[in-house]
Structure formats: C-alpha cells, structure tokens
Length: 187
Image 1 (spheres, rainbow, N blue to C red):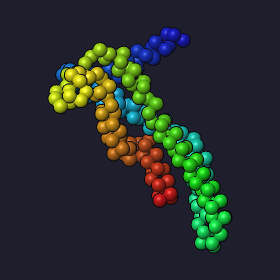
Image 2: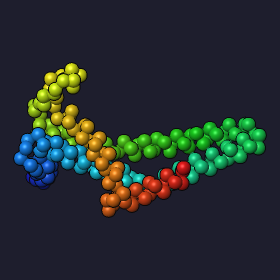
Image 3: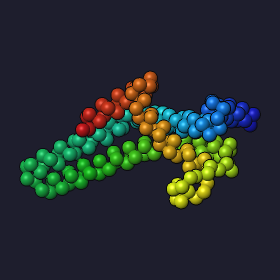
Image 4: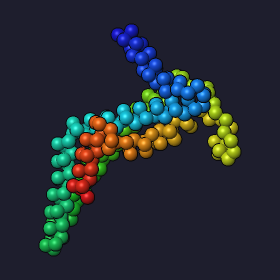
C-alpha cells in the first residue's frame, strides 16, 4: 500500500510541476504553473459540487417545492385575511427557505476542499521562496511574500475564467444548463 501511495504522489507531483516548466523564464513559469494548479483546484471543487448536486437532486428539488408551496400558502392566507394562519405558514416557509439556503451553502463550501491540498503541494515545492514587493505593496505586506500571496489572486482569477468557460466545457455544459434551469424556476 505504501508503494502505491508513493507512486501516486510521484505521479501527481509530475503532473503539477509540469505547469511550472513551460517557458524557461522562472517567474513566468511560476505564474503559469500556479494558475494551472489553481485552475485544477477550481475544477476539482466544481466536480465535487456538481456530483453532490446530481446525487442529491431529488432532495434539493423537494426543498425547492416545499419553499414554493409554503410561500404560496402563506400568501393565500394573507390575502384571505387570516393573520394567524399567515404567520404560521410564513414561519414554515422561512424555515424551509433556511434549509434550502444552508444546503446550498454546504454545497458552495464543497468548492474549496481542494485548496488546502494545492497549497500543501506548493509548500512542499516552494517553502522558503520569497518574492520581493515594490512600493506601495511593500508598505502594506512587508518587503517579501511567499507563494500564498501569488496563489490566492490566481485562484480567484481561475474561478472567474472558469465561470466563462463552464458553458463551453463538455461535462460542465450540462451542469450549467441544470443551474440555469433551477435559476429560471426559482426566479
């Protein structure tokens, strides 16, 4: 088992370090490799969330239907002038909405599970490497920064790029269609 784990780590390391050896220019390669790593982290998180949504589609659709039903019933009670029924139904609708909200919050948190692994790999390769900062950044962050300072903005940029690529990527095209449909139904 240990040999299998070691072989997997070597294979993953080779896959990740390849992004850092593209041009021969050290800093450019560092930026490209870090963007590549951050983009892989984005894809891993998005795959996880897409899988969770597909597995739990029935439950999530039930939550959506429950919210809609309770909102409609509360609105009907309000229109009928039944204040007690309206308050009770509105509380139920709010509780159902809360379940739906925190379920989506949990799914959203699933997007970020890969970040610690990406940063841990970077630490194994780039610990102790510092980048000098020019003013005014050096006034805010100090004279030098480590790999995390570069990784985080590139991760955010990778997430933005992925947002625009998602409708064009084979697997994620279907996920985007499902999200668009869900947004149209709830909006």
